[in-house]
Amino acid sequence: MSTQAGFALRGRNPDVLTCIANLSNDEVFTPPELANRMLDTLTEAWAADHNGANLWADKTAKFLDPFTKSGVFLREITNRLTKGLANEIPDLEERVDHILMEQVFGIGITYLTSLLARRSLYCSKYANGEHSVARSFTTESGNVWFERMEHTWDVAKCKYCGAPRTIFENRKGLETHAYSFIHTDDIKTRVAELFGDDMQFDVIIGNPPYQMTGGGGGTNDSSIYHLFVEQAMRLEPRYLSMVIPSRWMAGGRGMDDFRATMLGDRHVRTLVDYPDSAQVFPGVDLKSGVCFFLWDSEHDGNCAVTLIRGDDIVGPTNRKLDEYDVFIRDARAAAILKKVLKHKETSFSDLLTGDTPFGLATNFAAFKPGEPGDREVKVYASSNAGRRSGRMKRALITKNTHLIDSWKVLAPKAGPGNSGGHVLPDAVLGKPGVAEPNSVCTQTWIVAGPLKSKKQAEIVARYLQTSFVRFLVSLRKISQDAMKGVYRWVPQQDWSQNWTDETLYKKYGITKDEKAFIDRMIRPMDAELFDV
Image (tube, rainbow, N blue to C red; front, side):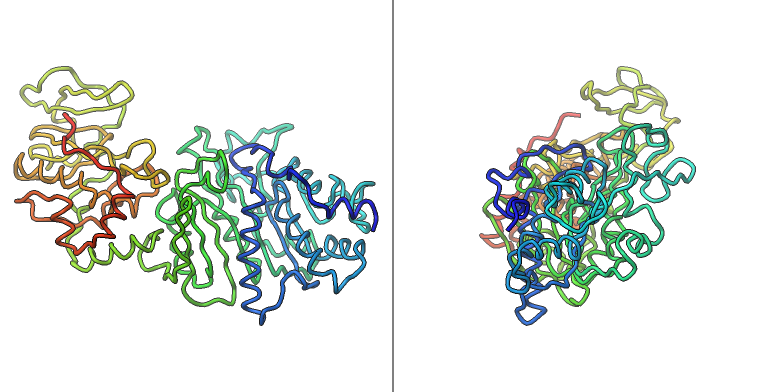
């Protein structure tokens, strides 16, 4: 065995790929442990579908990571093939060369990550370099391709990824982040140009870029990971496995069509969900958590779902992903929801307004201090400056005017900072308050109403504070936002009586174990309403 091949195969301690830091939001490197969990899942599926055969002993199987970063997937695949093909191809150098030339392929997302991936795979940033463990490449890129691309502008945005023109049009000397895998109308032709006309991948696997900046960061950033999933499916692999944010399960801007497609796709064979992203990506805080899935072109059935939260592992359970319009991550929660929905009661969301209930933005400040006078209304506002109130002309309010003269409940449109389910127990919602007739509020809240009296409004507000209600909200709330839609599974009640967790648990037949489960999920909230 040559010195080069020996270096390629001996273990690294410590593994350098566990030590590198992420470069940016689109370059969240995959820890080797997670890559191997995904490959283990793939191995089991292949064996089950091929009469117990070992995927890694198949010298014809072809693998693609179309958005390789550190090269960890390509490296771990190569390590497994090197061991699995030992009997088929006894000569180590010949075996490694066959694997690298004929079986393992990648597309870099940036110039830097393409070099890093080649270094991980070939032990050299040049596939044909002096230190490369591959013997037969004639090009520097080998089978890990990268070429700088430009965005295709459709007025203000890229037609493929939605990147804003104002930010990415003039990037002299900088990465354009125009990822080649999704910047094409014909991915099959693109792949044929890169790797050969007859290229058909058995496995596509990887960790795609998650978002494209919108210029302001945070909520202005647009998700793009779904574009990579959809593009990979167009290549018609036998298996597809990706790790992506879990936000698509119940929310995310622009995710409605993707969510419907994924939940309705009976080819999704396995789904492993981590509500706390730091459990698999140390130091990375994705509020929705992350998941990985295995899509099998020949599978037609339910999905094996596993939820992993610390040491608490639920599953795998046999789930029908599209049982609801959003995905309930925990099978135990799904069982509780069924008990509630069988009552077929009117949804609490029917009592709520949408965003910006009276047309006043969060930062609205064009009101005067003091109590309202003739032809004026009271205004409740809250911003970084704190909660405050004042008065303004009633005639300026043209939205939801039927709510002005009634009692109403103000429900914060955003939950506490750690709400979203990744930190338990979760408060889920902020404290509600009661607002009197002749009052309006800014975008800080959404409004429940009209309500008949102060007493009824207080009953409704305290209902929203119960763990039961906040638990039902949490099933649809995967981020900090708490808009009208997250209340869809909360039932309306008889508002002539008070509702507590105990009366609600009794009404819906919630068991002792289910109560304990809700208590672990939902943080207690005292009965005091916020003082508007």
